[in-house]
Amino acid sequence: MFFEVALLAYAIDLLFGELPYKHPVIFMGDFINAFEGRFYGSANSPPTDKLITGALLVISLLIITALISVTIVALCALLPSWLALLVLAVCSSTGLAMNMLHSSVAHILTAEQPKQALSYLVSRDTEAMSDEDIYKAALETWAENLSDGVIAPLFYLVLFGLPAVAVYKAINTMDSMIGYKTPRYFYFGKTAALLDDVANYIPARITALLIVLIADDKLRAWQCMKRDGHKLESPNAGYPIAAMAGALGVALGGDAIYHGQLKAKPSLGIAIHTVNRQTLVQALALKKRINLIVCSLLIIGVFVS
Image 1 (tube, rainbow, N blue to C red):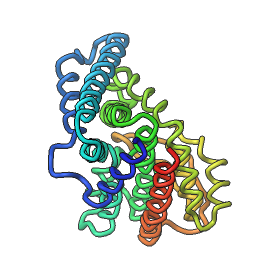
Image 2 (cartoon, one colour; image 1 turned 180 degrees about the vertical axis):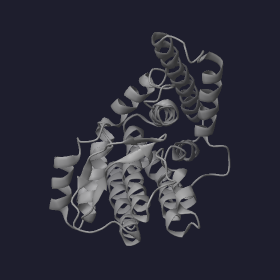
Image 3 (cartoon, one colour; image 1 turned 135 degrees about the horizontal axis):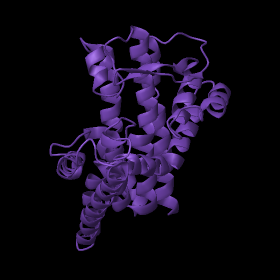
Image 4 (tube, rainbow, N blue to C red; image 1 turned 120 degrees about the horizontal axis):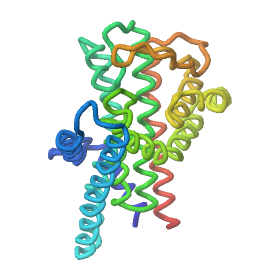
């Protein structure tokens, strides 16, 4: 039944995007903020205390998320099969973000203040960015979050069902909120960051292979992924970004400013073309190919499972 749920959930996300109720990730964020405010301690707390407190946050949120999602699955077992399928698909669709991701990145193309629009999507500082920097960051966001927001949740959904998607989103949300190597979060967010690395290890590489598959120049995309995918500090983000860079024939990555500090980052891809507005348009147009392949694989899964 997992493939049926995944196919319907993906269709719901593509057709309707964010549903008109408070998103589960918002509740997760509220819990994280409340836990941090109550238990973080002071800035002078020993690193081990912060590490333990951060680990307790991870355990607490994962237990709560798992209990709620398992309860939903148990209650759905009491419903007629068609209604259970619909309820599980609607709940699972909240873990998918193809519609929102695509529209958010595409908004960069039409925003009156693209730097401000981009600042909602990335953790780097955007004030001093050139137009090329803006489009590069948008491309990287599109490539990386194809894994976090689409392929990874589908991967866990077809394998283990709704509870796995919910747990994955909890991990991903914690990483996005506290998984930074800043003085405040270096220890407090370490458990969340490591767990996110583990959870995304396989999906990030599947995403990169998917990008290679839909690229016009598949060989170049493959070569860039193999050569550059491991170069970023993250063990996962570089693979889909390098594949996207190769698919488009551009160089992504490079130095960027985070929290006021310049951070040296390697270049990924090959600079055959300059990165501009049309490059982002071209990358976003790949959504149709991605949808075709993902839906085809899910339909095949429905018939063979």
